[in-house]
Length: 260
Length: 244
Image 1 (cartoon, one colour):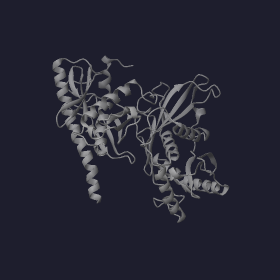
Image 2 (cartoon, rainbow over the protein chains, first blue to last red):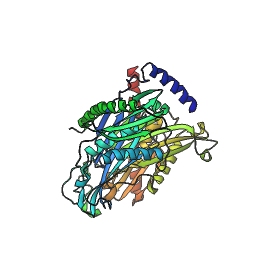
Image 3 (spheres, each protein chain N blue to C red):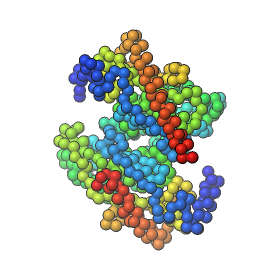
Image 4 (cartoon, rainbow over the protein chains, first blue to last red):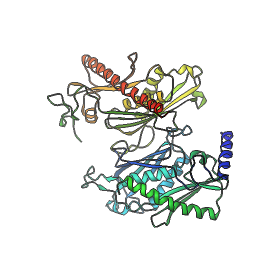
């Protein structure tokens, strides 16, 4: 593995010096994004997202449960991610490892802190019964940039979710109440260049990673830096600018996929 | 909760609850090679079931003590997505999925030329995205296509199909209500070239005569599904030829 990595590093670094990437993209360019909704009919909402060869599926299930003691009149939202062994020769079966937990938590923060789901509208009886939302994310094919693929899949699945009120004898089904979503964009740095939407090879040699979620007002809604390398202030500024630009395009693709 | 007697599964003309006749399969769609990382893969829709299968290997079996010095081990892992059923399923393996993984592994082992790869493992991952009765047959059938797509040497492409009994009639390929409220379910996997039976399970109640009839019907179903499997594999490689 280390031998292959160092060959890859040399190759990709050389290309970067000439302003190029291995797949011909510009530094701030995403791979092709495809979103397909309604892929699992037993889920309340679902979506399959492809970013290049990376493929992720998210499904939403809802149940009636108890609220958190510190928010007794709000619904509950939980996100889980599984790096199933199907997605990569390096993923193993078993309980979720650090990577899966970081991924789930970053996606969870993106969805929860941005308040995209109007949890306050999901109370049935204050202090007793609220709607509980489970977002389960399965990584099917891992070719880099799981953060953006997973959060986009979670958003698309939530946007197609129907609250199953009829099944719980609580009236008619209705669409999940949602606000405008923030869109996450991930960048990595290697050999002094910062590139958007890293492929697996680029991720493997990356020194630093930064994920920025921006909303339609171009405000920042979440960030996560990863890996042991450092970033300069200028680089971070550039990343934020590019997140806003790419975010706009991705938001268009998301809205188109849900017919909005 | 509906009880058995509330549901009429088959009418006087032999028409079933979803409009099928007793010997009809649900609609099946198979696509080979849909994942990039896996060495072989398959997406399969069977009625309301949606299943993915991915194959890795042959590669060194880990942990080392699982290695067999004479042949490869076959690890099938059947997993249901949390959102694949009406009430969310807790992620991770439970007793049911472990058992299904075991019987599928054993069925696949019979057709794979495992003695060509000592100390290796061949890993077959089956993910159920949507479940509607008959997921083990759908999973095994998808695994057969994914193994072929991965180029794993096999004596045959394994295939599965179930027959069962509803309200006294032997029928092919039980649907959801038929599985819940029917009298018996008999999933069978075969090697279609030789007719050898690779997997067989039954629950419910069948007379000897009904069992014979059901087994014949399940095997007939397997052969129909086998043709669809082969077409799916062929069409992937045909399109490759066209491009070239």
